[in-house]
Image 1 (cartoon, rainbow, N blue to C red):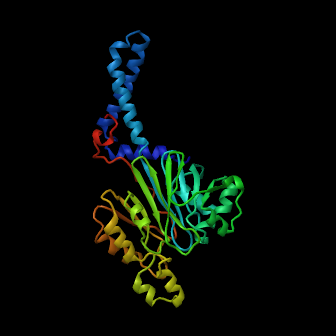
Image 2 (image 1 turned 180 degrees about the vertical axis):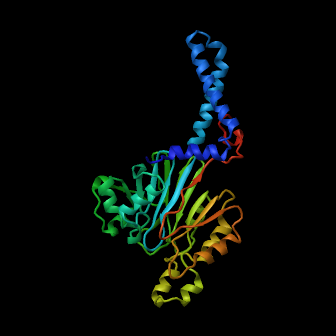
Image 3 (image 1 turned 45 degrees about the horizontal axis):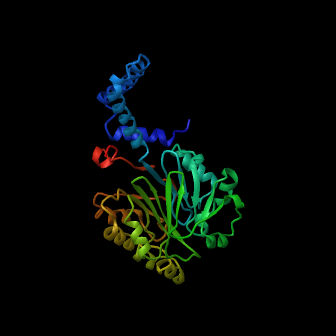
Length: 337
């Protein structure tokens, strides 16, 4: 039986707050008994005596309901020139950014994390290169998922998507998909109308920043908003210069419409990340021109409080979570102003 995000959220919240301890389990049972007592007294006409308890227990319920609705989950299903696909979602809605792997692989990799493709409400396409759109047509055919492009990206993709599944957006436009808000912004890359995205839910924001030639103002300003980021670190400059690629390809990769180097990614991270950046997933690594161990050493030496991960080109990452900090107070949550 597939585990749901709702189940995951409860388990993670309870675990992070220590609620699996015996004391807290007894506490929750006590709350349940109080609700039962309220119901009995209501039926016996003693409701006035228990109005305080009703208010208190409603607050308990609202508090835990609020906690369950705060979390935002994310995972890289695949990241690299062999295919890119990123999952972001909450307890009821999820989107993919790009689908450069096959429909079968999307299904398999979601299932490996006990996630269902039925939770995917939309797929957002960053640009028309094949490593970002390979699985789109079959995903639409098999699962009837809406696909969001800019008009120019769709025209240049050569994809054949039914009209009812084609959805268009413009750069710097925000789109609501269920309880998620997705904002696209333009970037520099050798495609017709490339965009990157931030995905927001409640107080949390996940960014997908790959296939970027340089860190323009749009990239910098949106990077500052994120609590977690898939950030391109495509190549090591020395490895690229001494590697097997022909000269014109080296120039394309390192040019202003190519990809970010390890050094450029590090500079963006050090100069423009906010204090609430919890996770950085280094993404779209070149197989020939980068070294994951080298990259981790560079970032781990300067990571501060941020958790650093490598997004693999061969397997999905773990399912990460942005959620309620176990030290967060009632005042910070602002449930009871």
